[in-house]
Image (cartoon, rainbow, N blue to C red; front, side):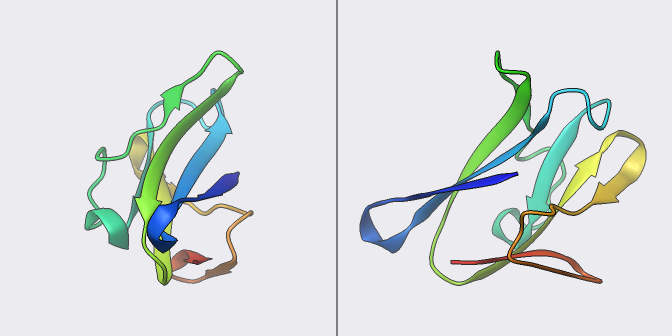
Length: 91
């Protein structure tokens, strides 16, 4: 699940959210905004049963995927578009 919060200066805070135990293990969001670096934006557990991480992004098209424990890659169904290379956000 993605939540978009408009910020001053045309930037947008994107909050990436997943259920705390689905999938099991550590999950991070990797994309063109963090040089596809695993672990740089790790989703952390919250009291509401979700795990989240927020990233501030400039206008444009941004590609990302989630990376879970054991090298499992997956996409976000709430992204603007999904293709064979991952999820896309149009900001």
